Length: 203
Image 1 (tube, helix red, strand yellow):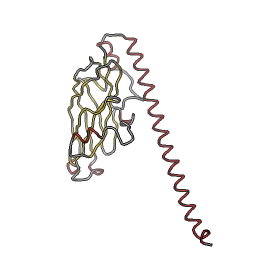
Image 2 (spheres, one colour):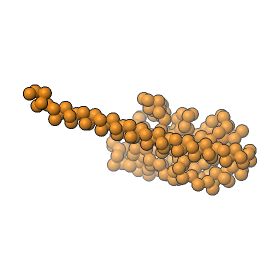
Image 3 (cartoon, helix red, strand yellow):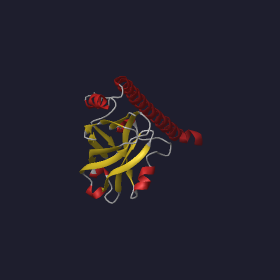
């Protein structure tokens, strides 16, 4: 009789467990598909750039007029922050540089105050996929969150290739801690949906 009495509760818990695992699996599956698509588009871009050769002016002209849908967004969101209209060395979204060259960037940073805690400090970590975090922008307390125009500097990788600039919103009073948060507890970098720029390194 005791088992019969608690059967509905047991069934409910089992159902919640199954649904939770299903949703987790579904989310992971979607993330995997997005990552695969972004990687595929990036590989296609690399092949085209390789065909152009070593003429950086011609490569930059191609990047300036490239149709970026599927790889780089005009605006992208991570948590309470949205970044828009990225410029790299005065070029929209993508730039061709030499290995190890410094890149000057500017981007609109929109931090949604309604999603922020008033006395928490929010940092937008910028980095390069596969290379790690490099700097932070939009370092604001939640109480003064809003729209800012942020300038920053990145250093290009030392090896030739196509690299994705991504970002992640972190709550931390210390920049060093925010940079370390680039990779989560499972070893994952920011998702492909936060790709806002491309660095093409040509030696």
